[in-house]
Image (cartoon, rainbow over all chains, first blue to last red; front, top):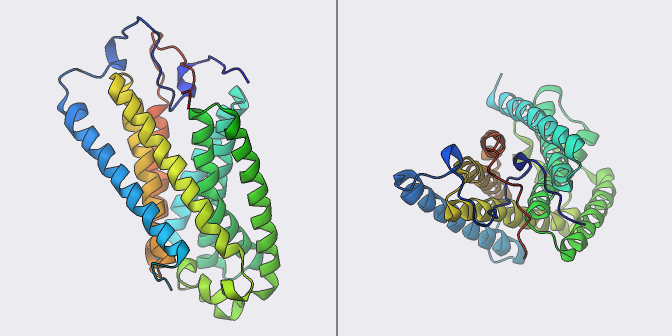
Length: 69
Length: 244
C-alpha cells in the first residue's frame, strides 16, 4: 500500500523532513531551549528505562521468577 | 460516592471523548492506525465502564467478561498495534495484524469457556474488581488459560505503544521540529507507562491502584493526542513512514 501523503495532523509519529527545507516559526524547536535540550531528553530516557524495567518485571512474572498472588 | 465508583466513571468519560475523536479521524481519513487506536481506546473504555458498573450496580457476568477481555487483556495490544501501523509500513506488520486479530479471537473463546466457572459468590461491590478477580476466576492450573494470554498482549502493547511514542518523540527532538509532537509523544508514553505500572501492580496483588492508574493514563494519553495532533504549518509535509 502506498503511503498516503495528506495533512500533517494525521501523524503522531512520522518524522522525516522534506529535503532541503528548514521550517521556521512555531514548528521549529528553539536552538537554545533548556527544556528541549536537557529536560525532555532526560524525561525520554527516564521513561525508556521505566519501560525496560516494566517489561523485565512482566517477563519475570510470566516465566515465574517474580512471585505474584 | 467512593473512589471505587468515581474514578472509573471519570476514566470512562475521558475514554469516550478520546475514542470518538480518534474514530472521527478514522472516518475522515481511513488510516488503519486510527481504527486500531479507536478500537483499543473503546476497549479501555469498556474496562473502565465495567469497573464503574460493578461499584454501582453489583455483579454481572457479561460485564465481567467485558472487563477482563477488553479492559485487562486486549486494549494495550490494540493501542500499541495502532502505533506500529503508523510508524512502520512493512509487510511483517500485516502479519502481526493478523496474529493480533486471531489471538484476540482465541482469547475471547477462552474467556467464554471460563464464564460458566466464575464464582460470583466471591464478589464484593465495595472492593475494586481488580483486587478480587482472582477469587472469582478459576486459577490457570484449573483451566483459565485466558489468564495466560494477558501478559503477552500487555507486553506487546507496552513495547509498541510506549516504545513507539518514545521513538517518535526522540526523532522529532533530534530533528528539532514540531515541538508539539515531542511533548505529545512524551505524554502518550507517560500515560502508557502509568497504566502498565498499575496493571503490573494488580498482577502482583496490589489492585487498589488500578483505577487511579487508568484515570492518569487516560488523561495523559488524551492530552498527548491533542497536543501532538495540533495543526502543523504549511511548511511541514506529511512525511513517509519510517523504513524499518
